[in-house]
Length: 237
Image (cartoon, rainbow, N blue to C red; front, side, top):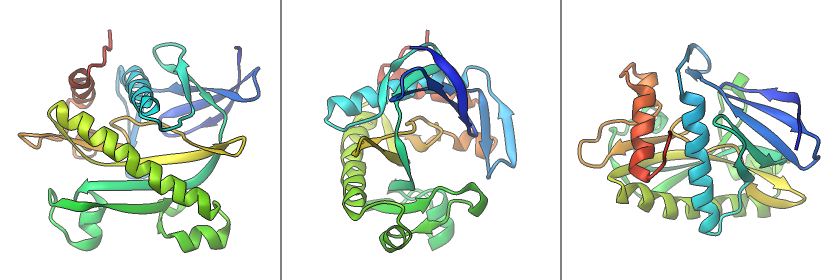
């Protein structure tokens, strides 16, 4: 497979076409941003760590019967994926209250949410990814109703798999976001799963081990990402 022209460059990843119509290459960069791009830094090793972390998680999800776009690692910072028609909606599950839900609803951080909450957001940087509901999705034609139901079901299935995976490694999966797309009409999990797009706390100390370390200037961002990975059994050597 031959990597060709760049199709898209986001906050932390770049996407390239290939000589195969159904496949793309994702490049994980060292760029790190928060607050809609107001805070931006380069963090050494980040691209490599997130690429390998994502590969590990996607393979775990595939083994659990969750269809994903992930095909395999190409290098330390690149992965091959299926080319999806992305649905412009983020699915968010929260097991513990943190981040925006605390600000929106006046809930104290750390409150266990039982059952977990499920939220939908429109992927639109210019509008700061506003919260939406299923009626918006249907009215504006962002996805078919049956695909929204599948997205919801798969998102909770991911929660069943990963919540236990992290707990067994001494960590709490606080919340996370997922994105989906269509591959020849089949709904697949797309984008990535890494500490950039979820919150992870130490089970005993509640120390934050995710991108909040960057947002809140806690330091040791990539060291914490690597710690999470090593606890899960990922090798970054």
